[in-house]
Length: 375
Image 1 (cartoon, rainbow, N blue to C red):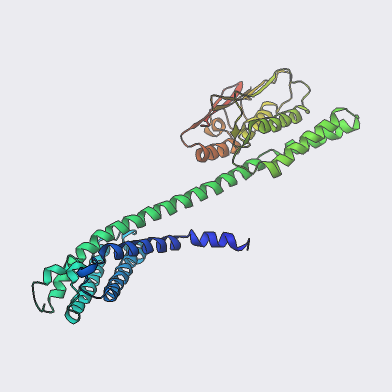
Image 2 (image 1 turned 120 degrees about the vertical axis):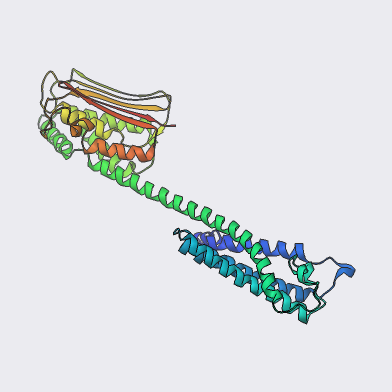
């Protein structure tokens, strides 16, 4: 029973079900509004009236769905407007002929039924005692007017439904892209970081250092976070700060001197943020800023949230020519590597028009600044 419930819920909430609900209400209202008054005003059997209304309703519905399920998607949606208008007119006129024929035949064989009470268009031909066959073709044109008005409304409804469907598909695609970007971003954490950390652990273990257990816990926390906890749209700032600090501490293990290193991670409120936005910036700091171990290495890193504005800032030493042989001023060097490119793509999805990434490079420093409006 539990397994069937979601399927039943989806069935009753499906597009088909919504169409059924609409037509049930429309038909009931139509029958109630158009049924002749009671008492002495009953001029014909209600059963014949129900039969007539049922036939015309079925024809009407068939035409509308022929338009929405075939003509619109096959011609109008593909910008074949001329063909659509021609076929829509032919279909509406044929439908009008059927409706007019039903009324004419019914009026001929059941004279007690005053069809002018059912359709305002029928009254135009009751001035003729026995309308000739050609009158049906004139009535069909009158029906075309009604069909065109209703068809326009249903065509607009089709476009609205199709637009909503496309938007839903776009949102789903964006979500998948964000997930893919996040997974790629995780993979961008330099494998050398893990190797360096393991080597440092080995060195600490040999020395029986008191830092060994704490280092193992920090590495374990980072790996657990990457594998199991970061597969969410947003995560608390405090959790992100904890992992960020663990990453920094592990990277600093391989450096003998970090006196010129400054790290600031703060927020003026409790908030949730997308996970791992800091990875490309912080990884670049350690990858490029400490490539050559020196007492003159300089790092200034800040991750701050103020008034729902997130700023990720880094400034570190930079050699005149980077490891890929690109000189300063080269677009590839200024824009950053794969990590920052990945971050740009991810932010364009998460915060379109609400973010900015700037990188500046000179002979001494590489500066990265990311600004994000979280609200």
